Amino acid sequence: MNPTQPSLVFIHGFLDGARAWDDVVRHLGERATGALTVDLPGMGARSDEPGPYSLERYATDVTTQVRTLARPVVLVGQSMGAQIAELVAERLGEQVRGLVLLTPVPLGGAGLPDEAMGDFHALGGNPAAQREMRRNFSVSLDDARLEFLGQLGDRIAAATVGTLADTWNKGHPSGAEPARFRGPVQIAYSENDAFVTAEVIASAVTPRFEAPGVASIERAGHWPHVEQPAEVARIVEAFLVKVESAANASDASNAAGAPVKPQGWTRAFEAKSQDSFADAFAPDVVLEASVLVKPVSGVDQVKAVMTTASKIYEALAFTHEARNGLRDYLEWEVQAFGGERMRGVTVLTKNAAGKIEHIAIHHRPLSGALKFSAEMSRRLQGQVDASHFYRGA
Image 1 (cartoon, rainbow, N blue to C red):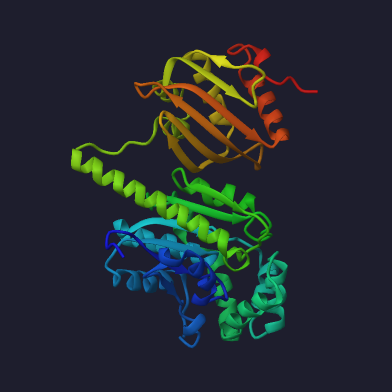
Image 2 (cartoon, rainbow, N blue to C red):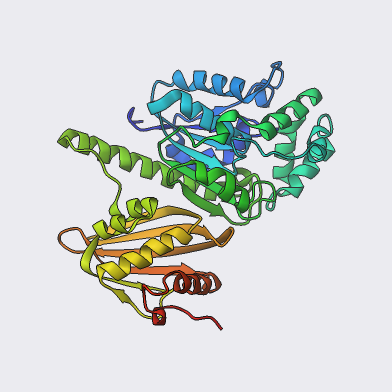
């Protein structure tokens, strides 16, 4: 393995252990060479280690293990493990090249009331209740995989379970602030997770990071790494490629004595300003989109439309990208209108000077596109002719 390539570090969640990652590691194959799968004190193979248990203790424990690797890493944490991964990233600085947060409990805690937490406390020493909990928060756990996870939980001392539950529920004070880790972040949630829902992700996880990637996993609940390991492995591998590409670009840029800058399009969405969009566009830029009845032309009109669109989005993540000559292809996921999710693809065509001369944006589903078009019309009244937008039924 190339010593400059990051190793993967997997951090499990509540009532689990290192072996919960077995299928993901298997699907990653050579990509997981040298990976570290962590058992946390009080769980997994370390279930006999006494307390006290806290996010601080876990972060210290994992930090110590990762430092011994003496190489760059990408941290992958699930549920409570995502809280720990973020704290470890804060401590290790540049050794951490990226974070993958899978069905993440917000670092600030889940904040569940005492009556709800009573159900989690009651799981201690109750194998049947633990299996029922897992079944209720999953979608694709067959009996064998349910029993596999159940046996991990069976090893944990009854008195420890309530303490662990309180640990992720109360969270860490750092969760009340913007994330201190500034590197690449990939967030992945399950569409059918009734615990860490899309709304939780949009309100308490993504806003804390700078332009995180966000991916959704179909046909899975709270344990997608066990329910859909191949899809989780695909997300992790795609993120590794992105991290390694960024590192290579940075190395090349540093060798040339110039810093790496964000692409104009994504930088403009981060800034949400007309000047930022104007910097990326050619004077005769043309915008076509599924939310437009007809194209919008000219830098002033297009930048007005794009600036307004960027302000409607409550959360935006560019999930995949590719380039072919002068064309860039960007896949993205957004949330708007109080958490409604949309996906789409943007095709950017540049001129020889590197300015964007043609934009094609494809939203889905149709219901979201129509609502978006109508809202654009309302906000751009007096700036862009209403004939460009859907007027409603």
